[in-house]
Amino acid sequence: MKNIMRSRPSSSSSLGVNGIGGLGGGSGSNLGGNGIGNSYMGSVSKRTELTEQQKMEIKEAFELFDGDSIGYIDIKEVKVAMRALGFDPKKEELKKILSNVELNNGMVSYNDFYDLVETKILQRDPKEEIIKAFKLFDDDETGKITFKNLKRVAKELGENISDEEIQEMIDEADRDGDGEINQEEFIRIMRKTNLF
Image 1: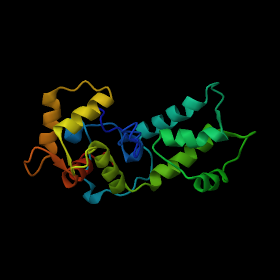
Image 2: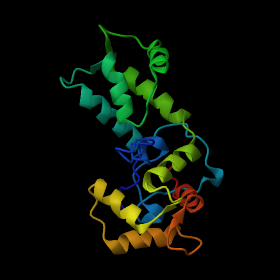
Image 3: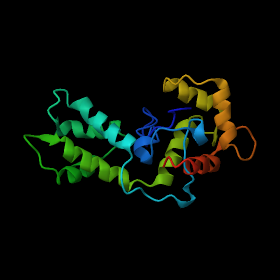
Image 4: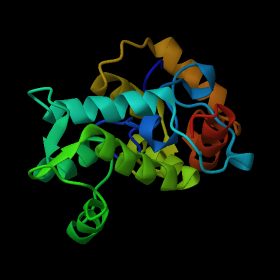
């Protein structure tokens, strides 16, 4: 599942900047080498620097709003750009964040935007992000990720993945042999793959 878990950490629309791999604390990958994740969290701690995937996603989010390619976006667009990266800052939080940013006629530079998003990403709790990702897959709230769930996510992301590949992903993560992935198994495989 080449890119099902990218890195939009808490954004169901993107499933990855993290979608849940990239910005959430990792980058695009597979579930245990086949497509949904990559990291065993038993010893995972917060990252101290961004991955290349995360850096690219920040740049892409900024460029969405920098239509004239001048290196600045309107202060009003910062919240929307942050939401595109999986963050949902409240009005007061955004005011606090932006109070440390030097504005240029109501505009925020790329460097300032990058710095504030980098700080937010590095403050994330990897295990919490994995649990959020699990819930995005488990849309029917059964406490399990099923073949049907994975097929839906692949389709939503435009991934052309065969049924055999989807089954391989489940088999890779499924420790108890029930044919589905529970939250504990999901956390284990995500930690093992070093996605978060």
